[in-house]
Length: 508
Image 1 (spheres, rainbow, N blue to C red):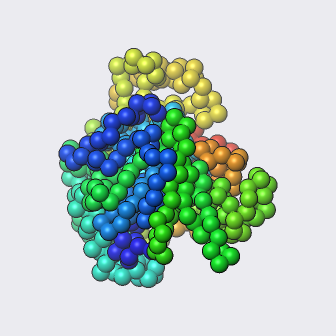
Image 2: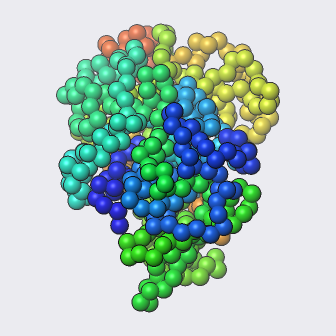
Image 3: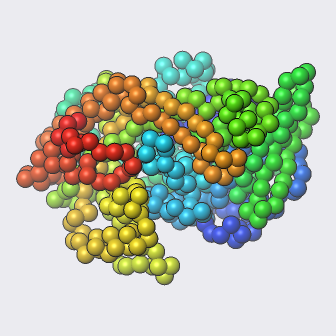
């Protein structure tokens, strides 16, 4: 296995064009030439490496870069390059990728069996290309609890921070949120820090002062060019196993390029050589199951040859519930993503995002006749959308966009205060839908199975209510709007497929 330092580096971040168009063999990233990054159509049919890393996200990129210093490494990413999609790098286009449901989108939408709309990253850099860009370290207690070396882990964080983390400059909305959290007692004031500690802090951001996103793909600049190959749009179909002493041993992978070509990559002989799955919470267990590792009965029901009966594969799937309140504002609100966080003693995190007009288009449909995009309010987004998910036909989206285009800009002026919880305690499971690696699996998260999760969400909303009522937020609220009206306003947005209860607007 890789060294402790390599493992820590791999875990140090938390938080296109057509399939056939990317033929160039040289990619530019932050002024550097990634000569080792190519489209998978250029991959050899058979190749050999010391390490094969499946999934070029926030774990795969730093891990592959680190291992390449001493070994020959193959990094396979099913998506394209973040440097080819202008939306990824621009903060004001944050919502555009999430509302893009095309096969080329860097965000692959899926709906859990609970009825909640979500997105999987499908791009080199993983979730750091489509999330809100908040950067934090884990707490010292968390690091010690995992048995990691604290000094090595801290050094690994700095290794990452030198490339992707920045101190944000707070605008009026974020500054008001910070003052409001301190005013209601979310203390102490920890100032700017990457550390995870109780109280109110300004955290790191992977957006720089110009609003440009820096992703885990940027960490590939640490690679030894002769020690790594990165293939994009390389969709791994299965892991190849051999038997050694009666036990299965992973020896290679089969993957397909965007033209349907089949490629195989094998490990060089060596006791320490490995295939590393870093394909995300859904991609990694899905690939294991498709390769014959998982619950025996489930795999046999799909006609999959059993390699190893491992009932834990697909279990313990959890998703942190996020609840947001939209606050219409009489004052202009800057466009910003998560910069300030209040970490409370009850396990609720309070955050804010400013500027409801992320990615808004006021000038009409583009040449591709796509409907106007109204950021987080876009009819097609699935966040604070104005069209219910089951009714999002192209015609319904176009009608809603046209109606919204008649509204005054002031209708979209405001920001969000949101809460998340530590954990959660509730978890579910994962199952295959079909014997095919490129279709979303069936995932159940069992939100709020444990009442403690729901209780912490309620506590989070109570904190939000007090922030909205604080003196610090006076300039960002209408005097004739009650906090209850904010809750009612937000509760009626059709954000998922969950059934509504009659008391939704009246009871936290």
